[in-house]
Length: 623
Image (cartoon, rainbow, N blue to C red; front, side, top):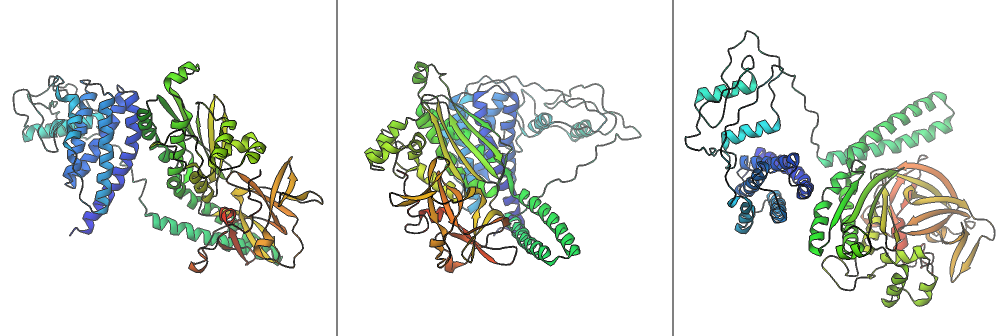
């Protein structure tokens, strides 16, 4: 039975190792493009070396063995003996995949899979027949009196000298003839030269051992001043505690809203000032707490270079992935939620969007296609764009395929605009692939991507120019913890619409609406806007017909929601309604308004999917 200390050490190792491996995936792809980049080689080597050190401390032999073999190959590349080629990069990436599998097994308490002998041989293949460099005892660098610090490369050289450059931990380094063992006096001299026993030596004379140590300087009356030790700047916090803090900050926001409402009605100037101070503090606290949940979107982007690289090799295409805006902050809940949708968008760009190198040359394009992945913040939303410079989409071909597959009929296809034709790719069962592959073209996927984005309160739009490429833009709320909503009144009831889905508000004038093909629409901005009556869905009988229109976007569609009153914008924390109402379509939860009333927060995607409910007629296709 493991002790609590053992479990804590294991968990710390897993957290740190996973961070290294996540970055390592992107670094290996960069290294394949620049195999002689010394800085990149050192970074990749240090990642494997660090994981091996932690695994060795915990006696995880399969992981140590795998990292050790990867170190061998990388060390030869660092020393200029070999230049990594595609086959060797395949072996290193396969080793990375196995390390991730071993991490998962270690986390779940399962037996770690041992590296296959074939993989170990492939990692050795680059160094098996390489001429062994002559062992040269490199002198240790002279140290300054300001602190005696050594950099990463010098530290690695010291470890290699003491414990074996290519061997397992504790193995002696090879020597040309004599033993590499050093005496206690020589070891003390080495430590003195590194950390400053006295004045730094001015000359270095290598002793007759594999590790060249400078002669010991005479001690001086006063030791050199050391740099002050930096205090720990970060601390790991369990995500459960962080979520609890966010929930409590949300509760404070509700109390703040209540007090502001009371203060405005009381007429008490002192109370209004105090409520204003609370408003300011609550806003600052809310921002700070939400900031703790944020992560740079670069952590999400790190996994994609490997995916694009493998797809390009599988399809025989030459592809460059360009990423932008990696420092854009995103709610940590969205980082994982967006992973699968973005993978599918990238797969489609690589498979359907980009042409084969020969076809690109005939079209006057560079052989290497380009896929661009960018992120930016626009107000309260994060916008991520996946674009390519490939063949683009032909609206006529899309309409023809949709008719062939029974998605729409010929009359509907004839009335579709170019934008609406492009949006056909989001229909269930729609695909333009001539053959089914393991990558895409199975007739599913884009509709699932759209549904997932809508569930996150986001939108998905497509733009394309034939022969120039395509662009898919998804936009999601900045955070899922505290929502900004638009409060509306329907009869005597209050509803909250997610503000991220609201485009505009206007009042319906007389004669502006009419019935068209069994649907109620309004002429707005030169287009027919489908209308849905929230009062009919809420069964607010006896009230006057609503004339206020809140235009919302659900996926790639725009709908006008008819309400009696538009109250205003408010920050709320959505609370679930409990198991009794868990499956109620169209309701995401509830919140308390500033005047203490209960408001239902609407799930617009759920309303859109509900047959026979709110927008059943409005959501019919605008054929």
